[in-house]
Image 1 (tube, rainbow, N blue to C red):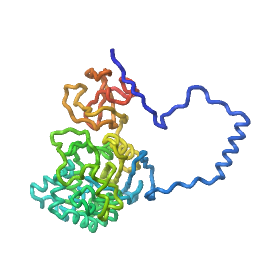
Image 2: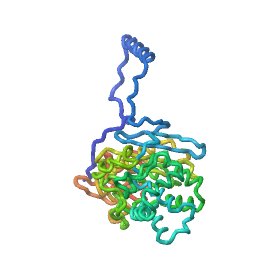
Image 3: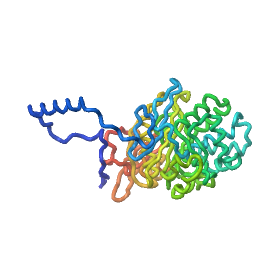
Image 4: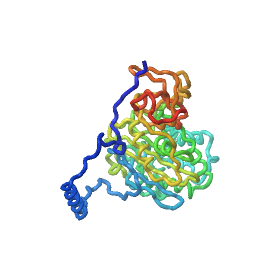
Length: 413
């Protein structure tokens, strides 16, 4: 006997249905009252909005999830204008996004051929797999905070500053805003020498799904849009990133400390008064579309204790809500998952090759479903599997947040 998993879910506001039955008909008195109410609404001024802790201009249609603090800037290079801005000048701790500045400082006006083999391998790993050891090496040998000072001057950054004086070696505590992330990409695409541009952008286009520290880094831009895209991501303050790969290793010296140590770093230093070092941070930055048409920067902070999968999902929803000219949205249905260490397989069987493990509770894009090996996770049994096009593999339907064994309305593979 197959037992269908029936986990209750609360529908979104757009999916809620009216109660069964015909709507009540309004009588004459109700019509008069409705007319009076409409008149009052028409002449009454709107209530004054409560001031934001960081009042900044906002444009576009960005949908910021509840409890999330976001800095958003989306710049269309074709029109030379922003399509989205939410807190664009608000500084965040950069986490691994600063590796882009570390690489640009190292390269200067030189192409990658000027690097020795070992340094080139380090830059490749730092940009593609967000390798912390490489960033720590360059931070130490090239002057630490002086790297940030040089990049501020060279790129004309206005909201970027070195880590607090109390933690000078913590390159992930560099302050950065969404609009400065956009300025960095504009410099890279429009001003940097062609060999530098081509090398750095080539590395960002070949970003690996699993980062060197075992975090799944294809959230935000890579999940929201089809290729071509190029990304440099950042994360800080999470316990586990889900990805499992032989290359995954613990973060070496140079990375941010455990999140519990962050509040003590908020004293002293040019960025300390403005940058939140305590809440978990997740950032997606890069370009989208043919010819790198649009630059996207979404920097986020999440409530303390937020899981990586929850932050990953919230950032994905925010990024998908943005107006990004030239972007192509992937086809499929976004569905939440449950469980920890859930595997994605090359085929619809547990004996097939494991491609990766999902961050716990993350939302995934599914394109079709088919019958495969029957899987039993007591008290659930199911032989249906969904295909995840962004992973190139299959997931047993047991771990989907749907009430039936099959996903209603999803086509067959």
